[in-house]
Amino acid sequence: MLYLLAMPINLAALILIYLCMGTNWMFGALAIVLVGTFYLQILVYFAAPKAMARRALNFGTAEIETSDAGFRASIGKNVTFLEWTRFKHIWMYPDFVILVLNPLLLAGFAYVPAAGMSTEVRKDFEDAGQRINAA
Image (cartoon, rainbow, N blue to C red; front, side, top):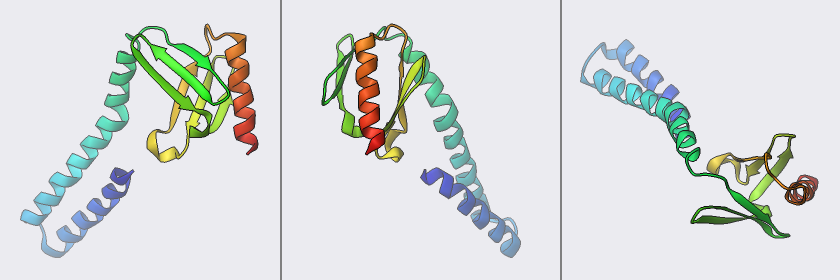
């Protein structure tokens, strides 16, 4: 989020320094910061999610168990329990479930594919979604 704010500020400072003093060491330093910030944005928004998605495909199939408090997801030795209160919205679709995290700025959302999901687990996600979306 800060990268989005830093880009226009750096660009404005770069233009202001160029108009006031021409090209000098300050112009070069800010140009390097601007290019570095742009590079980091490209890396964060495009390269890193692709690499993580590629790696996630090698984990195998997750097992999901639901309860009134939340759901437990396990892939091999990796186990996590997420409470329903962590989610701001739960959106149900025929092929997947989107869990919007609360607060939104932390990680955005989680995606759970519905392929192989039992009707019992799907019903628990729907019930939790109705409770959360109604609140």
